Image 1 (cartoon, helix red, strand yellow):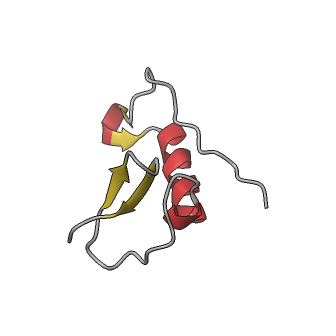
Image 2: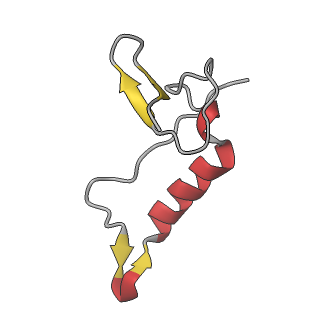
Image 3: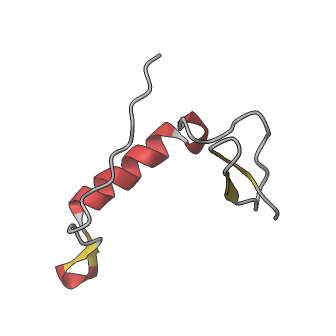
Length: 70
């Protein structure tokens, strides 16, 4: 299985557009992330189960996001 990277919209692309609606470019980005699932991302360590309420914390030793404190 090949890993497809998620590419962030450009820094000049606003998240919110007129009328308070989400920019379609950002909407597509977030929809893609939700569709994939966070554990499918290459920079998330999936060796430890993430439990309800945990946050992901960057581990500079492994270069991956790992479950942190609740």
